[in-house]
Every structure is written in structure tokens, then in C-alpha cells.
Image (tube, rainbow, N blue to C red; front, side, top):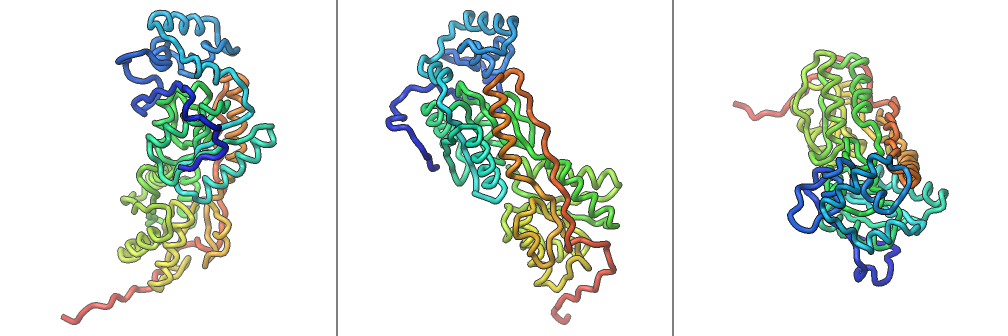
Length: 374
């Protein structure tokens, strides 16, 4: 993990950080000193609402405030003075954590976020880690809280990261980029499910019936939603749903998946979970002498800048990552103005971009396999 703009001596300051089970808000039953999560569970509210009551902020209904105060009294909860001070002091800074490989989508969402935050008068204090480690993520939140950021944002497609953030008492609004529901957290998302349905419907509308899917990693929320969209679209049309081939977002895994699909020799089209893996599928087809789109149609996801220059140019689903970054900032500002009433923004639906890699299915040329004489 790499931290930027770290405050001198931050590690020596006091913070109130308590980790839960990673599954949501509220946390498990108290086993020692009561935490903000224990109060939230007792009062039947989110831990952010408890924070607002403790810091005497507006936007909390009188009846809700009373329940929180009763829960505080019943549990004899005493908030950390340092955490309370941090929650009430404006720093003009937002914390951003990026966890995972610096792929095109997350990197460009972070750029859009930074630009929008600066336009809104905020600086961004950023931490990054190449792979998601729960303990390192907790430490990153801890350090950002010590620097008195007004909100913390997590950009990571992995389900585990959202669970970790949901179990942290940071005393500030927490916002995640997640394509699955995130109870207790503010969420910003692209509609991966609908995007996958649109991609699959495109292939079906061309006349394809044997459509395979190359999916992203099992721990990826985006991959799960794209797989679900493909599955539902296929079933809605009465088409067979075969087990997807799972890749890791990189071109090499797409190449390996392409080899498997071409060896089967059944599919006339493939919906690939992202453009990088699509590049690998195209390479496998070229090496096997399979023509795209004459013998096999290929559609990807993301519309990276290089997609238009693949051979053939890739049909794909365009995601506007800069707008996603701006949606994150807008959600943060909503939460800072009045967290209890801050609703999640509607998820943006990716746009179909039709290029040369998809077409109506044609008669397949016979694939002649070299076999040893018997």
C-alpha cells in the first residue's frame, strides 16, 4: 500500500476503529467495551446515524435521535474523544482508497473522482494497494481518519473490500463503488447486470443461439453481475446456459479461454467479461484460423481506448468511468450535507458500441484436426 499526503506523526494519534465480521452493519454482539456498532444495533439505525447524533448534526428525526440516545445510555457507550473531534472538524479533504490492479476502469474512475473533487473545492488524500488485504485496508482507513478526511471512498471491485469497510467505525461517511448491494454504506455503481443483458441480447438478435461466456474472477462483483445478466438473457430466450470459463481480466486468460472454446467447436458467439480478455480470445481465434466474425462473433465489455483498433475492431459495452468518478463525488457531497437523506444515485447503464467483431452466424468452415494414424 502507498499513502500520499500523510500527516506527520499520524500514527501516534488516537482513532476509534473497530472491525466487525465484514458482512454488514450492525456488527456482532458486544464482547467487551461497547462500540458505535453496538449502539446502532440496539437503536436499529446505521452507525453513520449514531455518529450524527453524537456530533449533534442536523438531518436526524427526533424519534430516531431519542432511540440512539436511549441505546447509548443503556450500553454506557462513551465515544472516543479523538474520533469525535475528527468527525466535527472540516478538513476540506476526502480520502480515496484504490485496492486492486490499476486497470483501465478503476484508474479512470479515480481520475474522474479527483477532477470532480478539486472542482468542488476538496483535496484528495489517496492510498492504494495492488491487491486487497483486509488488514492493510483497515490500516488505510485508520490513517485517513487520523488525517481528518471528511469522507472515505473505496474503489475496488472485490466483494471482500466492501465487507471490510462495512465493519469499520470511521466516524465519517463511507462510499464504495460496488455493483452489488452494500447495506450500511453509500454506493455508486455502473449497472453491470443490464449491460451484460444488452451484450447478450445483441448476439441473440443477430441470430446466435450457442453463446458462451468468459467471466471475470470469482471474487469480483462486476464479474458476478455480468455473469448473472448473461445467464438471465439466455434463459429468457430458452437457450442453453453452459458453465462460463473463468479468467482473471487479463489477455492471457482470455487466450486460454479462447483455446477451450475453439476446441469445443460449438459456440458461434462469445460474450467476454472485459476487453482485455476479448483481445486474448481474438488472438486464439487468429492462431486457430477461425475467422471473426464469420466463424465466431466476439463482444467485450468496457470499451478501452484500444478496442477500436483490435483486429477486427471490437464490439463492446462502453462504460463512462469519468462520469462514474463524478457520481462518487456527488454522492460524497450529498452525504456530507445530510447523510440520513442521501440516497444512492441510479446506476448508469453501459452503452452498446457495435464494431466489426460481431455479425450474423454463418456456416462454419470445418475444423480439421491433425490426428495420428491408427
